[in-house]
Image (cartoon, rainbow, N blue to C red; front, side):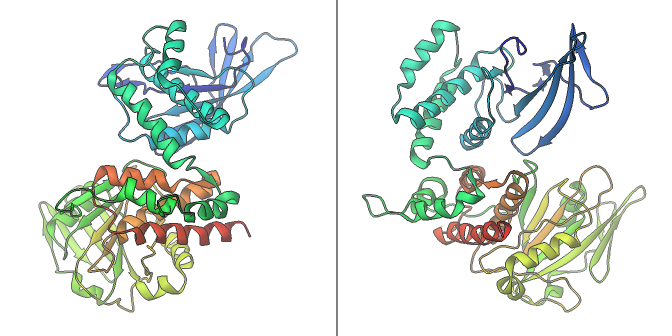
Amino acid sequence: MIWQERSNIIVVITNMIEDGRRKCDQYWPSSPSSPQTHGSFQVGIVSEVSNTHFVHRILSLRIAKCVPPTERRVHQLHFKGWPDHGVPDTVFPLLTFMHYVAEIHSTGPIVVHCSAGVGRSGSYILVDSMRRHLISFRKLNLMGHLVHMRRQREKLVQTVEQYILCHEAVRQLIRHGITRVHSDLFQRYLNYLGEENVNGKTRMQMQYEDLCECQHTPLCSPPSDFITLPGYHRPDEFIVANWPKECIELWQLVWSQNCQTIVLLALGDSDTYWTGVENVDDLTVQHGDNFVLLQNKEDQLCVRIVVVSRAAMEADFWAEVERIQQDRLAYHDAPLLIINSLRPYTVSSSSHRISSDGAHPLLLNNVTSRSSTLSLSVIYNDDPSPSLAYCLCALTALACQLEQQGCVDVVLLLASYSHLHCGLWSSRQDIEMIYKKLAILVNTSRV
């Protein structure tokens, strides 16, 4: 079918195994050196690039006995965050995925499949069709189009929740437009966000009120212990915790997540944070000048301590980020742990330095690990901006997206973080700061 219809894009909206049941066979090879044969067709894999929400594979398709040999390239886009009979937590990962798919030149019909090929596939096709209608005609009829689709295949859009998701995706698309912005259009997008609507509100203000502002009374407070947040590479790339001093829970978390680097966002004497914990369960804790060694009878974990100063970050935010990135021991294979110490201290002269001006140290610190997972931790304290750590996470992810894809999607992260914990963003200034620092990075990368 792919060969006959000259399709070069396959959209996959299922995982191989879900709830312990096989939902889809892997019809592509895992390694370039091990192509698969299906009848007279040979399927190889040319490349595979993944991020938090999806995997982009380029497959080679050829007829084994064709003379002369003919090969075609097929893009397989595998969306990972849509459970069977359910819906994604927010619509923005799906929308940014659709925009990504739309940028690939299509030579034929796009093939969409999930497991049964009705619920998730139908929802994707419906939303993408409405997206195309909005771009081309500025109008839509969602229910009418679903009726039209069901005349061709029954039971498309299988549940009420999926139907609601389709409406919500279209609503957010109308409200906020295409939020996945290429670097060469970013300044124009910023100008667009600064424009006021008929109510006198800028579009950036609308983003904050719609996606970030807490509507509860009393207002929601930040997490009391810790929260896991997505980044560009992984859904658990960051952990933001709230401990005023070194404690047993800190090292339990570091050990369980194989965290190799702790970054301390410091306002004062960083030495006052450490209380000298020596034993945690069956672990011994040994403190060095800028490292901590955790070990038990069977294993050990060396954790680098990096201190970040506000002054250095205010002087040159991205230069400090680059320096920290070079200090890392490995790269993006496990959570970046950020700990709010809630207490002023100064940076010791022997420590690494960074800072934050409300701009947040974007730590791309490489890390080594006892196993296949790695982690980086960031600790900061009593700060005028309680959202400092969350802005750090967002800027880290956006910098990685810019490097890998040449574009950024701020709204995707704002919405994802707010969904995980209401009240994460303390004010509109957090959002403005993210856009401001990102504009500096985008302009620098284009020079």
